[in-house]
Structure formats: C-alpha cells, structure tokens
Length: 256
Image 1 (spheres, rainbow, N blue to C red):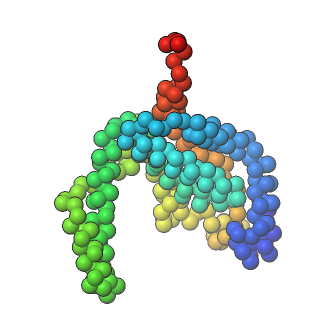
Image 2 (spheres, rainbow, N blue to C red; image 1 turned 90 degrees about the vertical axis):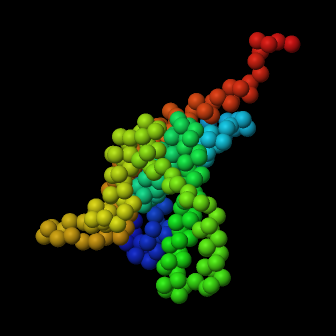
Image 3 (spheres, one colour; image 1 turned 30 degrees about the vertical axis):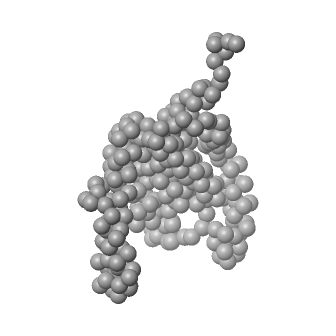
C-alpha cells in the first residue's frame, strides 16, 4: 500500500490519498476482501428481509447484539482496507463480544435478566465512583452529588451481569473467546507491549522505529477474522431470522 508521504504527513489517515491506497490494497487482497464482503452481504440481506414482529424479549435483545456485531464487522472492514489493521482489530474485538452476548441470549433466555440486572449494577457502580472521586477532587457540586445519590439508591443491591467469558461459554464459543477475543485484547484493544507492535519497524541495525501510517501488516488477518465472525453469527441467527420469515408465508395447504 503506497501513499504519498507529503500528503500523509499533513493529514494522517484523513489524507485524500488514502483512498487510492485503499483501491490498491483491495486489488492486492481481492480474494480475502471478496470473502468478507460476501458473507457480510448475505447476513445484511437476511436481516432486512426478516419479520421480527413476533420476537420474544430475549430474541429482540439477541438480534440487537447481532446488529451491533454486523455493524462492527463492517466498520472493521472499512478500517482494514485503508491500512488501519490495528484499529480494525479493536472494533472486531467488540464485534466478537456482541456475538457472544447475542448468541448467549438465544441459547439461554435468562441472559436477558442477567443483563438487565447488570445495567443497574453498572449505573450504581459508576455513580458511587463519581461521588467518591468527584467529591475528593472538587469536580461536583452538592446538587450533582445529590442526583448521583438518587441513582445509587434506585436499586437495592443489583447483581453484576455475566461477563463476556460466561456469555461465550453459554453460546458454545468458549474457544473463540480464548483465542480470538483474548488475542485481540492483548494485541489491539489494550495498552500492552504487544499493542505497540503495529507502529514499530525494525531497522537494519536492530533498533526499532515508531512509524505512523498505513500498513499491510495484519490486514489480511483482519479480513479473515471478519469473515469468521460473521459466518459464526450467520450459523446462529439465520434460524431465528428465517423462522418468522417462514411464518409470514401463507399456508397453502389450508386452502380456501
């Protein structure tokens, strides 16, 4: 992927020249791009053709997570094809998390209640932290603290929701959590030593140089994970999306 240094030095990834680099990258990795886009097209078409009017609450929640997963995968593809693989992998980690919770919601309706309780738990936890830190640092007024106290007292001892690992296990995706999700956490999402690899280039003398710019490193890897994430979601959500589509078709056997 080649981009004029003068253009990039002025605007970074916002440089118009990135678009020509994107076209070049797509040509070089045509097969990987085509595979990811093909499954994306399939699941998008299925989503828009589905009748969701009779879904139960846990199925609506599951579908909502699947929609977030699909959007994150498509956003990841847009970043990867511009030579921003590390940023694409950050978004892709979120896509896997949405997949875990969506698939878990389908497999176990009780996930809905766990996440509802977890929402209250996190709101209360945040309010308590804001009161503690805001009071010490003088960031909050007395009125603001009072409002946060109301949030803190709204729910009596809420429970934390199941985490991504538990969701992945309930969905039968435990290995994907252990491999892809944890790997992306270490190499892309979190501030770790591995998270800096994408901007370091080894020099002839053995030293490392930090470089800011588009790169082919891990781009094909990202395309492959995007396709895999969507394929796994497709396996789990097509039955749900197709179920109500089939119900919407009149039963010809009942005649007139």
